[in-house]
Length: 159
Image (cartoon, rainbow, N blue to C red; front, side, top):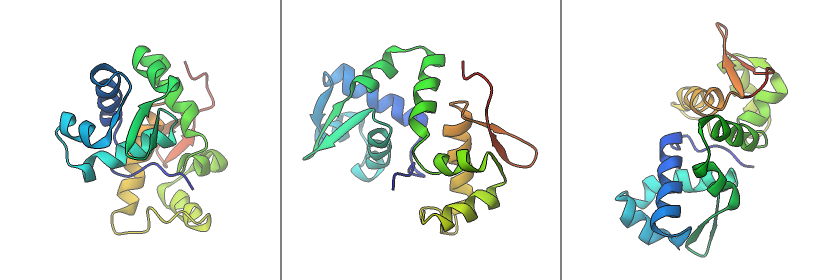
């Protein structure tokens, strides 16, 4: 089951894609990428896995390659980037469950995720991590709107 990593951030995604495309011409060894980005591999992997789940990169045998979708993302303006992320999130948790619920509080979605077998947020920081992901990825991409009671799926035009 694909889940957005709680340690993955949009800014890290942009940095990863830019370095991969502009410095390594779209393909490199993860070790070289780690050295170029000056981060520990443990800090790099959450965004690598998330980028892979979003279809922006492919990882195989220690190598990372930017996908056509990843190249489109970095060449696009902000509105198109948000659309790419919005469309890519729809089959990834917690957004798959969010779409199913349509409108929800943090507690509601956490309970539904547990019912669906998603264990990522079953820890002391889980509720906070879930909220950060919903805001940073969901609200950023306009897939979700923040409401007084929690969140709801944005049914308005995504442009």
